[in-house]
Length: 123
Image 1 (cartoon, rainbow, N blue to C red):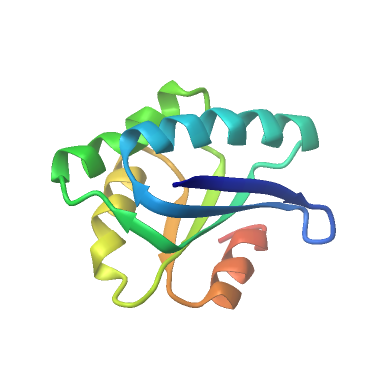
Image 2 (cartoon, rainbow, N blue to C red):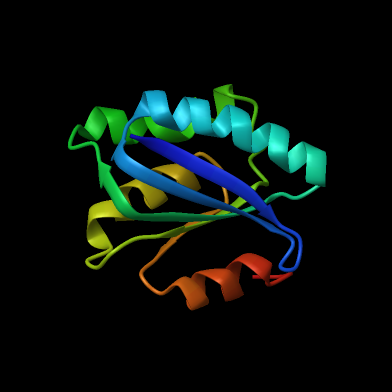
C-alpha cells in the first residue's frame, strides 16, 4: 500500500508508518522522501511504525534494504527506531544488517521505549 511521513515539531522527530509489504522498492522511495524531510527540518531521527507492515520474506531483500537506504542519500548517522509487533525476531535480521552497515537502527515492540531511545543524546 505505501507509507506516511510527518515531522513532529514537539518531539523533534520524524514519524513514519508503513502499510502493506515492506520491500526494497518501498524502502527506496521512503528513504528519498525521508532524507528530504530530514534535511528540511534539520532532523536526523525517525520513529518508524511497522506494526501494519509485512516484511518481505526474501532474505536477499532484507539484506539489501540498508544499502538501498544509503543509495537513496540517507546519512548513516540518521537514527531510526523501528516499532514492530511482537515477536521482534522477524525484524532482528534487518536491524543486524543495518548496524553492520554502520547505520543507527534499533527494533522495538514498545513505542514508548523506541521514542526514549530515539531522543536520547548519547546511547
